[in-house]
Image (cartoon, rainbow, N blue to C red; front, side, top):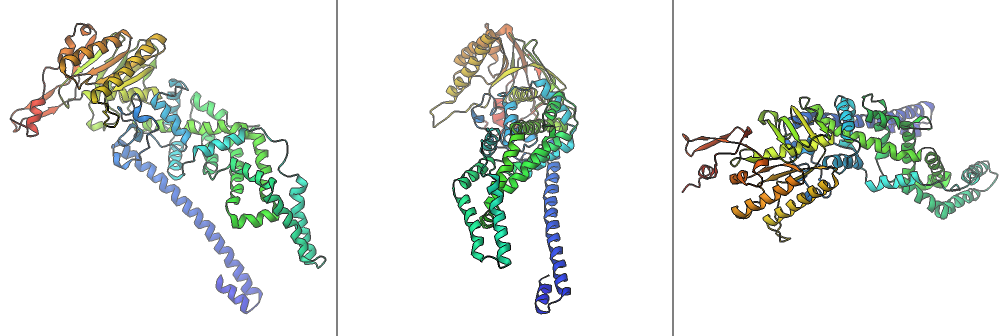
Length: 568
């Protein structure tokens, strides 16, 4: 192309000019095709990564799975740190990714129990339906990999603009918006014909500069900045809404979301595509060298703002509902990922009947299937508690986490790692990974006492309000003090929780706790056991992680000391 241009300059004629023009058109076409090819390459690379993640989730390859930052307050939450819901090697890694901060907030609220709407049964039906919608889930997941996460404040500013009352005046009268550019065009034509001097063309440009730098221009740019930050979300929304509109998965919640995706009989997809084009047009102001001449010649910003206000008048009040539909769908799709990955898991029955957590073949969701041992578990009803005993490493803590993590999944609307599960809506509370604090001057025992106090207070509040059931999980309750005082204190706490009609499970090494008169009749003792291989040197131990009725009859602390070389 360049050589043809030089040829046309050296040997004027139609042939070199036509050749240069043809090659220029070919070069532009190749640039466009190349850009499209790069977009396709990025897209299919993201889709490939999404599908590679599937086997990684099944194999629990934690180091290869993306880590979502824990939400604010997760480290002090009532059960999130104890059950490893967020961070590395967490339940969150087994779920699908989310695209928007609002989608992640909804999902987090369901997992933490801070967001209860819609009802569990409605969410469960929607998640079950989306488990089979591979295209929708994979597309959402691929966009989550590619898109830069939008800033929540940018989306909030846009919604504030979209829902604001329309001002009673245009940024500039139509006569001015069109008159100044037409005057410039007329002046250029007259100058070209020799009717007026070239300086006359500067008068419309000077008028455009005055309008741009003056109050009208400043107000226009301020409103455009309020509507559009440099957010990819506006380019992404139309495609995500199209996915929701075209998805035919049958569930009341999904149908309700689809029903709200229109305005004045026009599908939300078309409205958001118009908005995406307006956002693209408004982006010109970020290119200073290109924007200034275009603005002075056409009064570009004023024309764009008029179209933005027209869009706002017709669809602005619906924008929040459309973005909410996207956020809700991506949260549901994230939970549907675990339903798709584990078709053998059961859909729990979450009811309001007798407060009891009853499961058959319950396993820990974060363990691989080939390394997991499932057990039948019953916690409750009110007035009873599960007392779990057993030697070190036998599986007591894992059982508590299995109960808690499956309760979290059930209340979120997801399937659970069990053959069957029935449970009420509960206020889950745990004391498993309690930590001391050197900087705060809090000992391990004091940290446990504070956690126990929170659980007791929650149980008292629920008992008085009669609107919830507290499910508590204590691992080695109140360890950190002497045995005699620990047993007395633990008995008092458990007695109080029983009187408050809470249900729960307690692990302990204090086998005498099962014989305490105040709680003996309410305790349901179960235990894990180990097998001693005395023929090996040093003696070895194996565990079958099978839950059995009754109190443990053996301990293994001294054997474990021998195994690690701490023999007398």
